[in-house]
Image 1 (cartoon, helix red, strand yellow):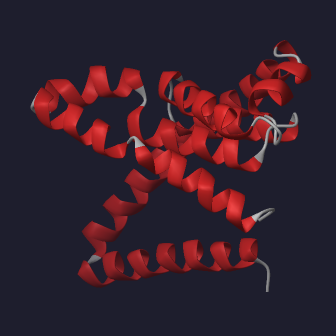
Image 2 (cartoon, rainbow, N blue to C red):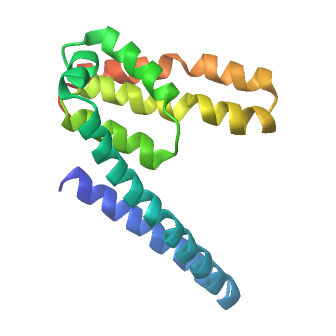
Image 3 (cartoon, rainbow, N blue to C red):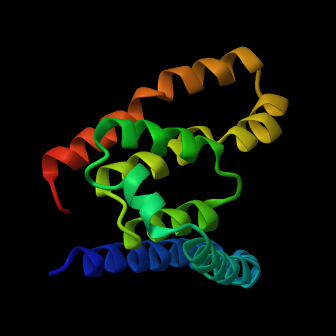
Length: 166
């Protein structure tokens, strides 16, 4: 069984499980959950399409030599550090972050560097920290969380280096 099939089974199983819980809570809860889930789906599909198309434009704009030079498999820890900075500086949601990571992989980026990019983006994207976290949480807590999170992209890249090609 492939990893993709296992992930699909787990995701659809969780959807069915949550749907069963909503169904058991009664028709009003089930109908409301179907309505809200459908609206979430309708709202996210255009974002995914724009992200995929946008990542294609990014791939066309950025020369492959730049990606392989800065984030290629031979760039080592300097490439990982560059990816961490790039991930933290990338604005946008997961559609943008993951699409750019995919483009980097397909354009010759190294797996450890792309893993570091995605983990850094997920942990401390600057615009998200400034626009969302600081207004809703104490600034000292946010900066402490970011500081504590700094090693994680490097650890993830090290694990990717040890594993080799996933």
